[in-house]
Length: 175
Image: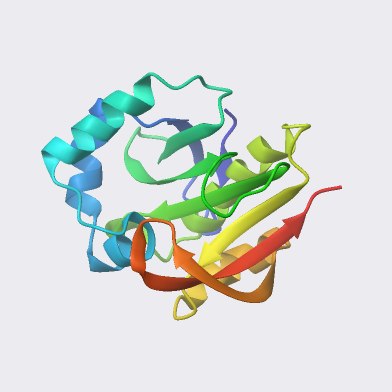
């Protein structure tokens, strides 16, 4: 996958499939904000290893893709996912997630990651709408979604990874 320059000029990032080699970096960089906003629970080594083992069996062009973002030195700075199947999705919709590990926030990497994920989704002829679910108390994620062209729908729904939380559904029509 091609890289995207971060807003601070820190260089290009590239997205690669999430794998076992990325487990230590994800564990070291997760914080309470990432747990709350994206993961829904704190990963431990065993559960993240098991998830990576499942993800390794997924097709690169399959309906569920989990990716990590590497900086030019190969350091994991964040990641995201593209899901064509899942709760609350209809035919033609893709769920887009993006996240940045705590030590790498504030440098435009969330926007770079999200832009690359959106480019991946745009290459899917079967996708006509991108769905982004954002905690209403997360202005940084909302700013990223807005710069992608997504708009809030005003619809609150269950967080995909945490049934006790609500997120706002954002939408971006592809055309």
